[in-house]
Every structure is written in structure tokens, then in C-alpha cells.
Amino acid sequence: MNPAPLAIRPRAEDVEGMSILRALPAAQCRSVGPFVFFDHMLATDFAPGQGMNIHQHPHIGLSTLTYLLEGEVQHKDSLGSDQLVRPGDVSWMTAGRGVAHVERTPQALRESGSRMHGLQVWLALPQAEEGREPSYQHVPAAQLPQSESLGVRIRLIAGSGFCLESPVKVLSPTLYADLELVAGSTLILSPEIAERALYLLEGEALLDDNPAPLRELLVLPSGESPVLSACSDCRAVLIGGAPLDAPRRMNWNFVASDPALIEQARQRWAAGDWPRVPGEQRRIELPR
Image 1 (cartoon, one colour):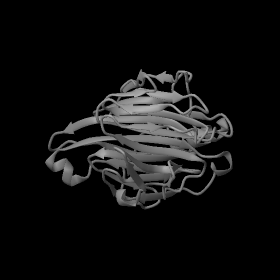
Image 2 (cartoon, one colour; image 1 turned 45 degrees about the vertical axis):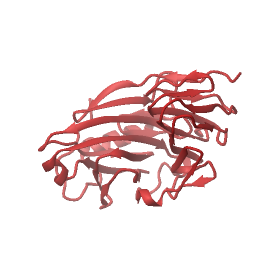
Image 3 (cartoon, one colour; image 1 turned 60 degrees about the vertical axis):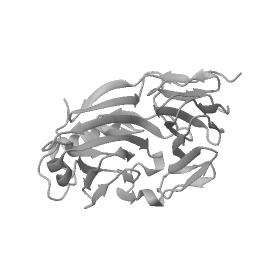
């Protein structure tokens, strides 16, 4: 019998009127591979005239990855990127030594009303890459590799696994897969990578012979090959990667292996010494 996974129950948050389930970081588990932050943006209906509008804010030492299941987001950043992100696309921003960005519901959808549902994760950069130049990459849904067999569809969002490799330019061994299983199908979660966690988005499933809890992060035992069995049509994501090369500190939107880097970033943002998003005036101030 395989050892039991560690179950992390996300804490509820509210961001711009959206209900969020935040599974990482958690007291029981600070990271899974390079993943140090995991937000499930629950399905939210915005009435006409409303929408998400997260003003410019800073990051260092990480990459953010936004993956939508429903709705659209406009991404703008201090590199000059201005990108519409649709369901199944990957919005991949690497902060490096410092970047600012804005995330909002596009104007057309604000006027008509819309529904948003998706995931946002943060991946800590390797120590050697923490001071790199920032960058942005948008990968349309059609460019993500996928396989389909015996009732199981796998789409590789980032990294490599299941004999697939995503075009997203990750900087360390990474696995991030979108799994869809029809009722009665099974998938062996082979230990292709050192650290892994499973998050069931919808439906009912078993992990080996035990019910997989809905919307909880299951950190899988290293080296084991549990079997995911769909009791109904279901959808899940699998995240993971190589262990971090050093512990990471997280403070607000900053991630770093050296606390001094975080303090420098806090001082720079508070002083206004930061790249600005073109055309944007409003910003989120440093929390006290």
C-alpha cells in the first residue's frame, strides 16, 4: 500500500470581489518543486460594469503563471506587454530583479458582464536566476501539447511530463499538467519528477482506493505511483518539479533566497524607484 499523501486544505481569500482558495504557501508545506504559491480563482460572475482590476504591483524572484478555465484577462507589464489572455492560454511573466504588472477584465467584458475562473501559481526562480532580466511570454492554448487516450486528456501547461513538453520557458525542472478524465478512466501518476501535488478541480475521483478530496492540494509521496481513477467526469491539475535549491522567503509579492533582496525591493517600491507599466497611474501601495 502506498503511503498516504499530505492533504492541504486551502484557506479562503477575497481578491477584487473574487473568491480565492489559496493552497500554497501552507504551514504544512511551503513549496512543491518550484511552486511556492497556488491560487484557485473560483468561478465568479461579474455583472455589466464590473470586473477584476488589480492595479500595478511589483514582483521579484519568481515567475507568475496565469491559466484560465473561463473568462479573459488583460495583462500589462512594465516591459510594455499588453496581452489578452483567454481560456487555455498561458500567461508567463518572469520577474527576475524586478517587474510591475496589471491584471484586469478587458473593457469589452466589463461592459457586457462576464464570468472568470482560473488558476494562478508562482514559481520561485533558481538562485542563479533571481537577478535576471524580467521577461514575458504568452503561449496560446493551441500551442500547448496534449495527448488523449482511453478517456484521459492531458494538456502540458508548463515543463515536461507524460511524454510531453510545453513551450513555456521554465528555468528549472517543472511539471504542470491539466488532466481531464471521463468516468471510469484511470491514470497512473508516475514519479517522473521528485515533488508532486494533485488538485482536484471538479468531479469525483479516487487516488488509489481513497476518495480524492475536492479542492484540496494532495502532496504525493516521493517515488510512488498512485492511480487516479475517475468516478465521474473530473478535472485536476498536477504540479511539481525538482526541490528548491535553497529555502525561499516570501513577503507580499516578493520571493527571494536572501532576505536582503526582499528588503531592498520593499524600499524601492515604497520610494517609487520601480519600472512603471506604460499608461498606468494607479498602483498598489506597500502593505505596512
